[in-house]
Length: 177
View 1 (cartoon, rainbow, N blue to C red):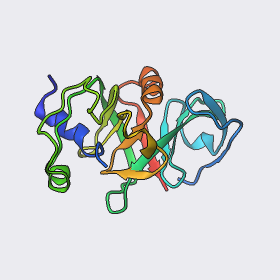
View 2 (view 1 turned 180 degrees about the horizontal axis):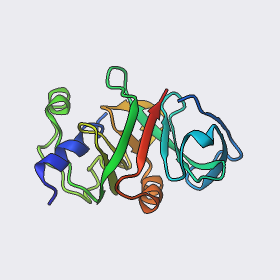
View 3 (view 1 turned 45 degrees about the vertical axis):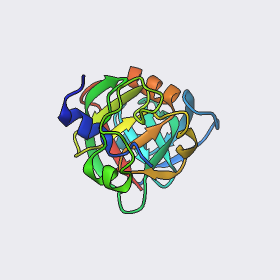
View 4 (view 1 turned 30 degrees about the horizontal axis):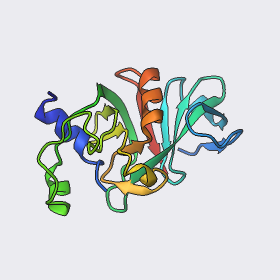
């Protein structure tokens, strides 16, 4: 079972740079795109373009893998640098007070692997307060591509599984608008 600190760190986004990217494909995971400005970020950096609602994993050769994401809703946005500080498969989720206040019907804990767990199949926690890059439920898949979270970055389960396999603890993350 994941400890309370981790559950709190994972909880926030479950409910509810100057780079220029040129696309070579419109598909999700594995879509390699030309990344102008790539020299600003070393290979293995996660760059989140909030206005585009895209996450880019830089490959170091001027390209990146592009994933569609849901980003923070108005008033919950963040920008700047972070690092991945944890990797978890099928994490438990406990809604933090701000989410519980907005959604009192939520249980206090949803076990990992449950179809109602908004963290999905994997989570990458960041060294920012209660922020993670994570999967989603089947019901919430349609939120990917929107501004819907409490601060986290929500991905399709197949995409977060792919990203999870590529990153390690310490991976740099940059959020730009």
